[in-house]
Image 1 (cartoon, one colour):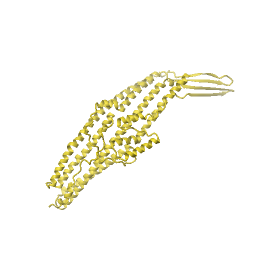
Image 2: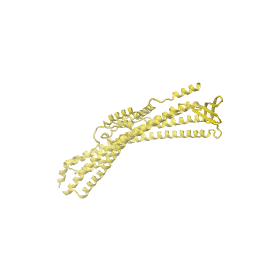
Image 3: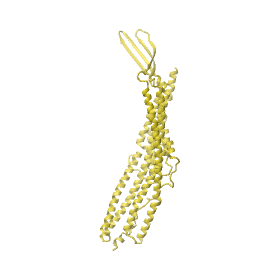
Image 4: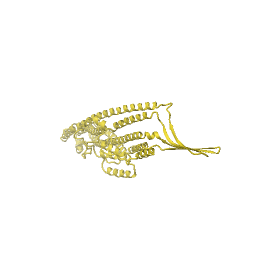
Length: 469
């Protein structure tokens, strides 16, 4: 009776959780990305997701909304969340005693029928049930950490894809301005050569610049298309009909200055926590292996036997595996090796986390300083040079081609400025991921115009230049 009560009690404790353990995953994700993860388990969840997606896509994307869409809708992430269901089923199964086995045998001959009946219970499984249940619970916790880690990785991919797509389209629009100015310059050179005011060499130079600008425009448009497609793949959207902001977010007023990036990585990174849990689980598994190394199978059951014309015989049956050839030393040695392997793997993860945190912070500060240098030094200087050149052009001290030459010199600076700002936001995303911290800065795009445009004043003086002797 006591055995039956114990079996009933232990089996009743192993039940499925209401949310499949996903609440922990969602909270871990929110703490590290600023957005909770969503698991589409039912038709109602899918309907709610569709409604939220429609609402988000009615507005231009931002870095935060891109992360939210990816966590809601990325199909690969949703598929990996299904591992939670598998792990929880294993956890519940480990908390329940194995089903009893019923044996039945019938022998007939010589006018006599003999029947054997038996019911076998896994007694060793009952004795080790608390230990194995705890072991599976810890494995389930590691699966939760892995699911949250996958969600954090997808969120990082979404943020990076957003910044790359916005920067690529911004560069493509600027390159279109370059192409337009190059075409005007080439046409002006052709007309001036016709009236004898320009040499053939100068005209060929303008024509070559226009041809190179066309090639650069083609490359930039293809780059923008590829970056947009990468973004929609990460978001799990069926097509590329999303609205992006006109430019990258502005550079923050000051860089982040987190305290002790290495310790933050060790305390908050999910891969470090998974390594610790894995080592702990391996150690507990080693202890269980040593405890049961001599008794591998122990089953107890009720049995009876009856024959024709005789009274039924009752009794019990015990099955025990005798360690005659394998005393468990191989399993113990395997467990020791696995434990040492787990220790070294955990150390490797910790060393890598600290190194990545240092590298990410150094890369972030370098990218911030470079972007600020372009914003505060290079672009203002280029603008002043352009203003001075335009004044001399309007005063007829220089010709239109000198003005265009100055505009060409701006192209590299403006392009590098956009790329430096893009690299800053990418480095910012990587720093937050390396430290497992949510974004701390506002990444809403500013509605201002593009950072620079090529001068267009030469068009109003085109006929004057053409008619000069």
